[in-house]
Image 1 (cartoon, one colour):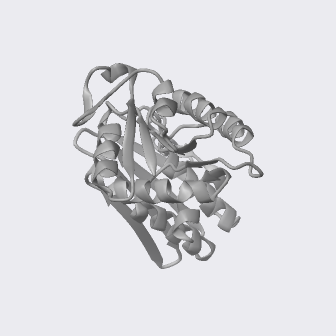
Image 2 (tube, one colour; image 1 turned 60 degrees about the horizontal axis):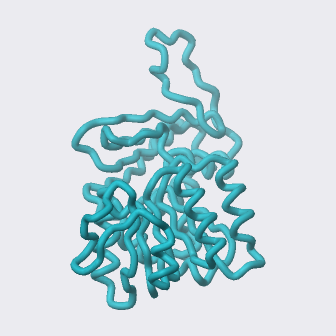
Length: 257
C-alpha cells in the first residue's frame, strides 16, 4: 500500500509518518504540509506543499490529521483523484460529513474513513458505554485533553453521547435548580447527557463516562498517554479503507464491533 500523509509536519502527522515507515506492508511515498516545506518526513522524503505530490508519487491512500475544514477539502480532492482517505481530524460538522458522503458514494470504488479517535481502547469504551446505557438513568461525560486542542467538546465525547442517547431514551432530567457559576454543569449533549471539557497542559487524550442508577454507579475510562496509542488504529484504517467504498464514520466497522 502506497500512502501519503497530509499534515506531515504536525505532531500527529509526524507520528503517523513514523508508524507507516515501520509497517512492513505499507510504504510512505508522499508527505504534504505547507507549514513544513523543506523539512524531512523520513530519510529521503521531503515535505512539500502541494497535494499533487500524492498523485505524482502514486499514493493509493492519504492520511489527514490537519483541521476539519482543510481535511474535508483535501478529502474531496482525493476522491476526485481516486485516492482513498483516512481522516483523524475531529470537529467535522454535518455539512462536512455530507460533502464527504457526496464525494465518496457508497456505490463508488473509493473509500473514506473518518474517526474521531483511533485509539482502539477508546472505541471499545464507547461501545461499552452504549451497552450499559439501557441499565442506567443518569450519565455524564468528562473529556480531558491537552491545552492545544481547538474544539470542545471532543469528537469522541460527542460520538459517545450520541451512541448512548440512541441506546436509551430514559435519561433523567438535570435536577440542578441554581447554577452559581455559568457553565458549571457543562454542556447538554445528545439525550441531555452533560459533557464536561477539560483542557490542561500535560494531558494527551482522556475520557470518563459516568453512569448512575439507584444504589450503584459505573465508571468507564480510557487514557491515551502518548500519540503512539493511536497508531494501531491508524494502520488498521489504512489497511481496511479500500475494502469499504463510500464514507465510514468510526473505527468500529474495521474492528468488527
